[in-house]
Length: 360
Ligand SMILES: Cc1ncc(COP(=O)(O)O)c(C=O)c1O
Image 1 (spheres, rainbow, N blue to C red):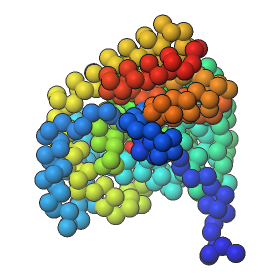
Image 2: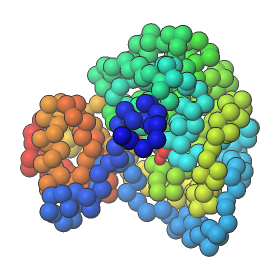
Image 3: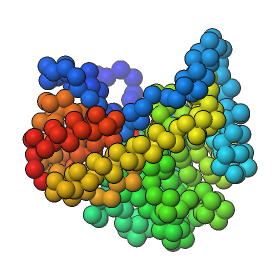
Image 4: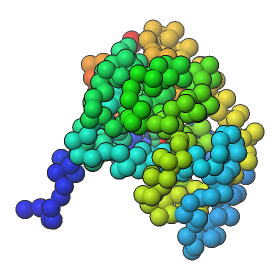
C-alpha cells in the first residue's frame, strides 16, 4: 500500500533525467578527471560584473526577492523592444513550460510535440494527465506539416524547441508562420528558444515577426545557456499580455530568487563582455564539426551549443566507452549522442577520445 492517493498521472510518470555529473561518472567508473559535456551548459564562469552582482545580492538573502521581478521584466522589455506587459519571468524557462502546462492542459487534452525533443516536455504534459502526440523527426528535423496534421479538437498546446534539443536542428520564423496560419488560434504554441543565441540569425526572430500577428504564440528564452547562469534558474517568456496574466497566477512565490534577478540584470548590462564568450563557443562548435566531419561522421546541422552524433544502435556502446575514459555525454539510446561544446581543452579531449574508440 502506498502512502496517500497519488494521482495516477504522477504514479506512472518517469522522472526527468538530468545529464550525468562528472563526479558521478568518476564514482561509477572508478576514474578521475572526468569532464561533463552532458547538459548543454556554458563552460565559462560568469563575467566579473555578473559574479559581483550575485555576491552582492547574496548579502540580502534573508529577505524574499521581488516576486514579480519588476525591474528585470522592465529591463527585458526595453532590451527586446516590447511593452512590459508582454514579458514574464520564470524559474528557468522550464518553470514557464510547467506554468503553461498547468494553465492550458486538462486530463485527456492533447499536447503535440515532435519527438525526439526536450525531455522535460513529456514530464510536464503527462503530469497533467494530458496526452502527448509525437510526430517523428525526419532526418533529425521537425516535420511541421506533420505537426499541423496532428492537431485535433483536443489539442491545447504545441511545444517546439528551436534549436531542438537533442538534435540541434532549427526551424525558421517563416516555417513557424506557415504552421501558425494552418492551426486553430485557440491552440497555444510554445516556441522554446533556449539556444537562440547560438543559432543562425537568418532563421529570423519569432518575437518581432510573429508575435504581432499571433496572440497564441509564446516564446521562451533563458539566461541558462548563452548567459551562463544555469545554476541560478531564470528564464523569460514573451507573449500576449492575456497569457502573461494567466501564467503569472501560478508562478511559485519568489521562484525567481534575489540572486537570479541580480545575475540576470547584471548580464543584460554586460552583454559586451558576454558576447565574446558566445562567439568563442560558436568558433569551437565550428572546429568540432570540421574535425568530426573530416573523420567521416555525419551530423545534423548544429544550431545550438552542442553537436549530435547519429550513432543509432551503437549509441550505448560508444557513450559508455567515452564515459569510461572520462568524457561524459548525453546518450539517446538507439538514436544518438549529444555532446555539449566545452572549453577548447575539453573539446580536444572529446575528439581524441572518440577517435580512439570509434569510427563512423
Ligand atoms: C530546449 C530546452 N528548453 C529549455 C531548457 C531549460 O532551460 P532553463 O534552464 O531555462 O530551464 C533546456 C535545457 O536543457 C532545453 O534544452
